[in-house]
Length: 130
Length: 147
Image 1 (cartoon, each protein chain N blue to C red):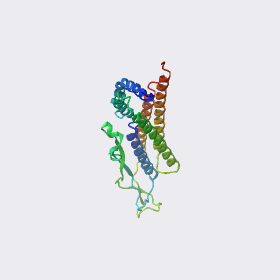
Image 2: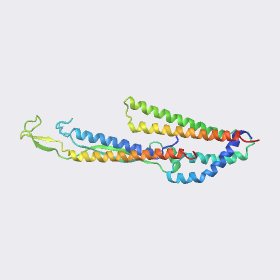
Image 3: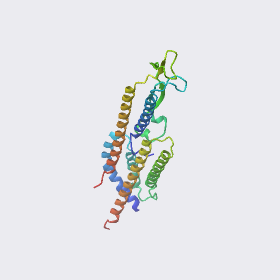
Image 4: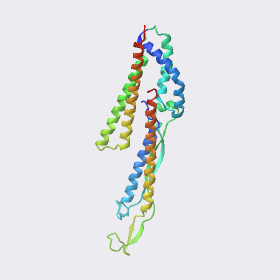
């Protein structure tokens, strides 16, 4: 069993515990994307955890992270596009520029949080006594 | 596309619509004494008409379909002219006066325009409050699990 799949098993159990709280928050917001990601994780992980010995090296979670980084980068590009449109006198209003910058900011912070969590659990694993 | 600020779409469209409304009101106030418009007649007061549009019509396959509902947005349906008749003012010195010395002035009530402007700016403020709230919800959600 490689480190990634162990990490995914841990993530699976944590996600399962958090699921109730997340569903309570999504009941009020109805659009929380993190919930969808968590559901994907939740459906992925038990299957792969049972087949941990198989050769699949966690392409699903890698893809998920890659997509996250791509989307954050897209949001940054969109924000800089609207700001340059505003500054060059195109038909972009001030609040559009501010909202897109804020979206880019928040999604970047979310990406940093995900990375922090991953790194934390990795270091937790590395500290484990054998 | 991930949706970090949920509910921001309809708010942004409302902010856009209120900006246009404010532009039209300022146009009305600026032309309160215009006796000769583009067509040679006095300026006609203008008004915006808002209409409701579904976000799904703009981007059909998006993450909004996950929640089963798509946000309803505001947009400007049209900017229409008010059909009030011109106000006749006695001013024989004006170059636009008719044979009796009467000048046709636009029938714009400056108080009415000011009240419209207050309403517009208040609803802009309300939508900004929604945006601020969405932002603080997102920041609070990001702080889940922090010490």
